[in-house]
Length: 349
Image: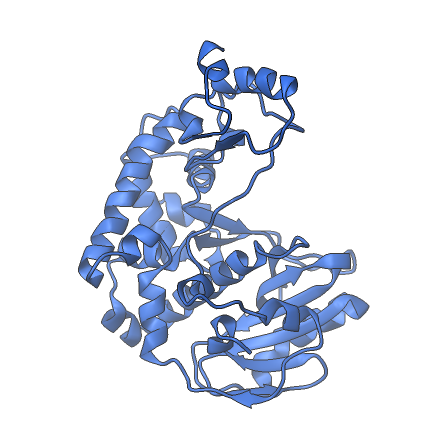
């Protein structure tokens, strides 16, 4: 209490998850003086999930998650993609395809400190050291577990599962640990923002929906470093490229959505017949939009099968559906359905 009361009028407290007992004193000081912005609390873990948190500061704290940099931020560009997706749709136009530039963007990721490195080799080294530090320091701060050595290997296996439905049994197969323990470790890696689970989108009329969440790494550059792949390797491995591209697009959309005034929730759609949509966005008024991701340079009517099913299921709530592909032309494939080049995500319209 003495420490908090002696702080300057405005102060930043970094890595607050390491001192959870501080929150009770902060609550008392905030209650005495309700001026907003006096304390900025930062940390590399979700502090509300710290087991020893003394007080949640409910009603006294606003939480803002800072994602790695988006492609728009890297190019100092304001994207209009989400407004078009939930609005009047996309105008027909032609752009140059990204090709190998897209691969470079996927491998680079969005962490500022990694992007500041002068070579891809040094960038990958930074990512690996970052993971080591996170697990040895931040994970230890929020949970006391005996098998810290399991987490880096588990995270590497999860990188191979990115953009796939979560399979806890497959993740846990190399370890002498129970399935519930592996599940708890996955949750722990979520708490430090290294993993993210994407829940299935559902509608009360959908009785055949699969309930398993989809797994995504928190950043595509992080995933590439864990898997030991560079741009040349990824260009040759089209299956892995498809997975990492989906994670790359998902995270870009998540970062852009964090700038919107109205919250946007993210899901995926897949039924028991295998019909799927990679990313489902639910916006204001429960409006629904779908995004299918393709690494190919061409699009066919068949690529819209999942989006048409989503459109049918969501009815009047359906705002629009897009197949994002590495092509050149924005064009329509039916009412509220569009093929859009990936470049449109992070270039001005």
